[in-house]
Amino acid sequence: MVKTKKETKTENSEAPVADVYSLSGKKVDKFKLDPDIFSAKVNKPLLHEIIQMYRANARQGNASTKTKGLVRGGGKKPWRQKGTGRARSGSTRSPLWRHGGTIFGPLPRDFGYDMPKKTKRIALISSLSAKSKDSEIMVLEKDLDMKQPKTADIAKLMESLKAYRQRVLFLYAGENQNMIKSCRNIQNMTLRRCSDFNTYDVLSNSKIVFSKETHDAIVKRLKAK
Image (cartoon, rainbow, N blue to C red; front, top):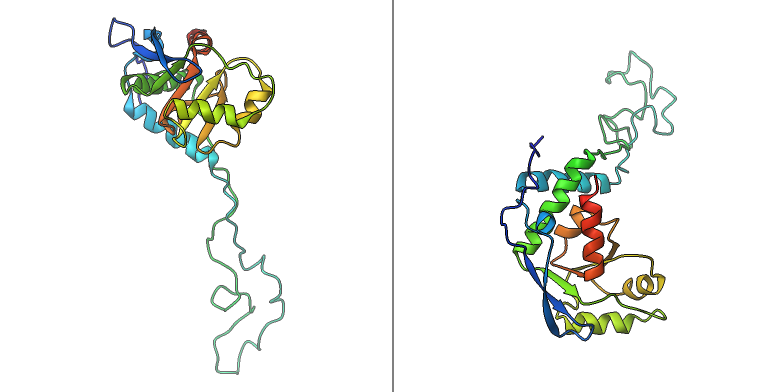
C-alpha cells in the first residue's frame, strides 16, 4: 500500500486558474480554483492503485466451467475394468475424454475489493489537481436551466466549447432530471453529480466541465471531515 500521509498538501501557494465560459461557449473571465483541491501534489502510485481497484470492481467474474462431477452423463462405466486390453476408465466425462470435464477451470468469483475512504478522497484530489495542471478543466459561468429535455442544447454547448465527441466529464450539483435526460444520448459524455463522481471518472475523460456553483459543492464535499 502506498503511503498517503500529507499527500493533499498544496504544491503552489497561488490558486490555480481556469477559464470561465458562457453558455454560448465564449471565454468571459478567469476563475480561481480552490488550491487545496486543484493544486495538491499528484500521487501517481496512489492513482494507479485506485484505478486498479475500480477496474477490478467492474469485472463481472462470470467465467464458469464444469468439472468431471458437474458434466451431465458419464454415470456408466464405459467398459469392464480388466480383460479388454485398454486403459481402465470409470466415466466418459473424465477430463481425458472429449466432452469431459475441465481440470482447475475458472469458476464465478468476485474480483472486487475496497480501499479506505481517506485514501479514495486523497486520490480524487490528486486526480483533479492533475487535470488542473494539464489545463483540462473548463468552468461555466452558471448552471444550465433546462425547462425540458433537449439533447440539441447540450450538443450545441459542447460544440461551442470545442469538446463535442471528446471524452467529457460533466459535473453538476442538485437534481435536474431534464439535464440528465438531455446528456445521456451524447457520445463520449459522462454526466455525474458532484457528490458521486470518483477518480476513475476524472482520469478516464480528457475534459472536465462544471459551473462555479458546482465547484463550490465539490470543494465542500472534499473538505468535509
